[in-house]
Length: 117
Image (cartoon, rainbow, N blue to C red; front, side, top):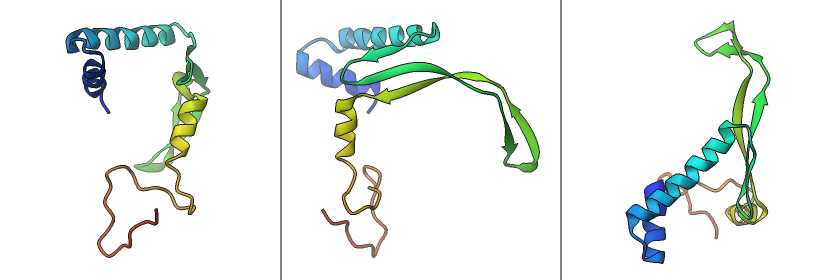
C-alpha cells in the first residue's frame, strides 16, 4: 500500500478532496519525522511506537572481500514497535501448520500442491 492508496481510500470514505487528504496525510508524516529527528518518541495508540535508538559501533565484513574488516560507526536508527491491536491483526496471517505463509500475491511453483486452509 502506498501513500497514494491511503489518500484515495480516505478521500472515498470521507468525501474530502484528494488534494486536501494528501495535505493532511503529508503533514502527519512530516510531524512524525520532525519529532523523530529531534530524538522524541512518537506513540500512536492502537497503532504503535516509533523511537530513535542508537546502534553501537561494530566491525562488519565486506561480502566481496570477506577477509577485510569494515568498521561500522555508531549511528541513530528509527525503531517501530507495533501496538497490541496491530500485532493481533498481523498474527492472524500466521498459518497454523507451522509453515511460513507465502508473501501476498505470490504464486506457488508448478506441481506444488495448494496450502491447506
